[in-house]
Every structure is written in C-alpha cells, then in structure tokens.
Amino acid sequence: MSAMILFMIPLTIFVLFVAPIWLWLHYSNKNSNGSQLSPQEMQRLQQLTVDARRMQERIRSLEAILDAENSQWRQQQ
Image (cartoon, rainbow, N blue to C red; front, top):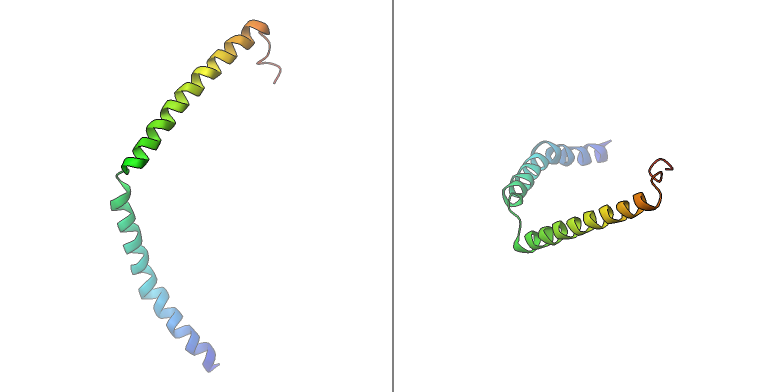
C-alpha cells in the first residue's frame, strides 16, 4: 500500500501542476511560431501550387481526349 501511495503522490503533482503548464507553454510557443512559414516552406508551397496547376491541366486534357473517344466513360464508373 505504501508503494502505491509513494507512486500516486508524484503522479498527482505532475498531472495537476506540471503537465498543464508544460502543455500551455508548448502550444503557446507553437502558435506564435506557427503563424509564419519559413522560406523553405514558402518555396515548397509555391512548387506544390505549380505542380497542382500542371496536374489540373493534364487531367483536363485527358478528360477531353476521353470525351472525344468515348463520351460515356463517366457513366461507366
């Protein structure tokens, strides 16, 4: 029984005092830094945007080809 009490007291102190402060500091720091993207992240985002636009154009071209060859291909799915 005494071993259980010796374990529960530090655990209770941790859960009531240390963990909330730790979480609050962690997420407040993360929110203040997370609002801005780094230059590398901005470059990656721009590259992904360019890639997405290229893929969108390719999909439109492929759909136009499929529409020309088989106008019923959309209903076959």
